[in-house]
Every structure is written in C-alpha cells, then in structure tokens.
Image (cartoon, rainbow, N blue to C red):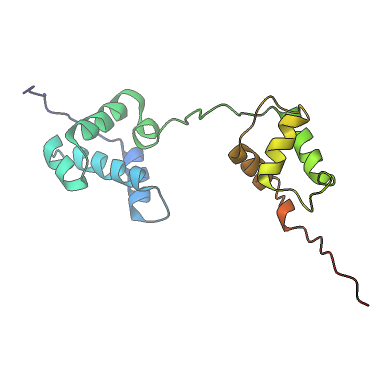
Length: 159
C-alpha cells in the first residue's frame, strides 16, 4: 500500500465565504455540495480518510479535490469543465431541408408523416446519406413539430 503525505488545504476568507454560501442553501448539484463539504473538512484539518468517510467519496476523489483547489482555485475544485459531447449528426442545411420536407404534404398514399417515414424519405430524396429514427425524433422535438398528430379525418359519405 502506498503511503500518502497529509493533504493540507487552507481556504482563503473569500473562498470560505463562497463555500458557506453554497452549503447554506440554494439549489446546487449534489456533486458540487459534496466537493464543498470535502474542502470545508480538509480546511478544518481532518485527514483524507475521515473526510472520505464523512462525505461518502473515495479517498482518491477527496485528495483530487484538495489538489485541484491548491493548483487551480475554488472554481476548478468545485465544478467540472464543460464536456464537448458528441458531434452533431446532421449539418444545419440538412436539418433545414428535413424540416421543410416535414412541413410539406406527406407522400402519396400517406395521411401524415411518421418519424420512420421522415427518416426513409430523407434518405430516398437524398437529403442525407443515412439517418436514424432517433436523430429525426430529436430534430422534430427541438423544432416542436409533431406531424403524426395532424388530423386528416376522412369521413365516409352519407346517403
């Protein structure tokens, strides 16, 4: 087992005030509150293992929070960097063409657009090389389009 030297964290008065604000109320993510509690207890001189047990984090996580505070300050210790996420599957021009297609009439023999039909027609009309139903569903959701709810009621003739 590796022996760690004791982690000493000394919070400035301003940082302590910010931590107290975070811990005293308001809506914060659980992750942020746990990190704030860990920093507060490290400042009080408690050992990493005790802090980890108190806030239910691993010793490694508590140590990392303390090191991030020492190296980069309070913001980096409490909050994660934004993550890039996956690249978009459709370009803006492709999205616009699909939305325009959905706003037009459905193909011959169809009463309304469905997510599956939009995906099939977008590929058939060469708007996109390939596209999945979920991508289409999310696109329609973001534009608040629900073409499958359009009512095209066909009434029988009365004699």
